[in-house]
Image (cartoon, rainbow, N blue to C red; front, side, top):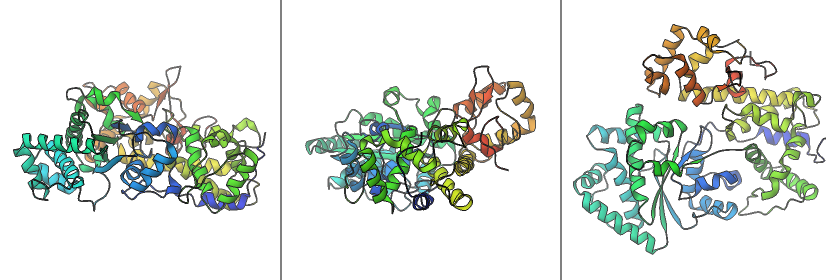
Length: 488
């Protein structure tokens, strides 16, 4: 049944064409208040009491780092999303994507410090001590230069601990908590062995500070950095950090919320808000010029999406329901989705519709939505190539075949030269290799498939074959009966 909601197709299509799609949040500049949507499942991730936040690429790790690091956006989140514990927090960045920031060492400086023989532990203690002493307006016991600070800390471990204890009491007496954020730690080196050492040292200091009253750390980490248990987490009581780990997960309603937030604060915002106020009894409240989504908007999200893109992915329900079809075709094998993918899919869908179906009654035509998924797949493929170069030769070898595939069919396609190229791609670019396969003395293909399953590129079917989600399948030109057509 078609929704009673109706939006002007041309003007809403134009606004969807202007959706802000960026490759990644590459700095600590805070987003606009009109861009901040806090899913219910992200509230724990923003709380100071949860130190480890795991998120796939595009899940919002750097975005939330920038939000928490800025007083205005952090207070906005506290007021609008009821995130516990961030109102009286003093936030500083231990490491993030900001080359001009002198409060933490950049990649070149970190490399220089480690090459001089300094340990990562000394670097992170220097970062922490500089932050707490500067906020409390206390005199630094060392010069501003990083080398002097680290050398002093390494030569005075007892005084360092005493100083941190005094600062901890000072924060607690003021009723404040210092929260030190870490994001994109994989950018600190090319060599994964060194990255593991750097991360492990920071995590050890985090665990130590859990015993303090008013000093907390928060790490935004990629799944592969969390899963490296044998290397990264090889220190006493590391399980205490892992047990409190939270995921940056996006449900379909949350992702649609990103689109709807843009519309509510756009040039068609007044029409959008008034339509929903009149037909769905949704009440909107402006906060500092921004219109956050009403909490009960998710109950209407299906009707809104159907009003924008129609109820079906074809002339009838036979081809699938639009509202459920989009997230299914944008998710990986673990049903994970990212805001970047859905923003890109809607933007591309609007652009395609504007060219090919300009007089369509809805803002988006279903063929445009299909093309949007194709574009999102191409971008996701680019990300997987960058993060895990060893995956590309394996999936490229499957071009033109139809999934699901049996083990023997995979073995036939993955020739000796294909496997050699795959491992060479990881080694040559100093990226994380396939973990199970590399550690398997017999280099069994089952281990390699397990690595792809862990990355959510493959999943096992009930009849013990291997299938692929459309977000990867389409971009590599791999077929599936009834699936989205791969690009030519």
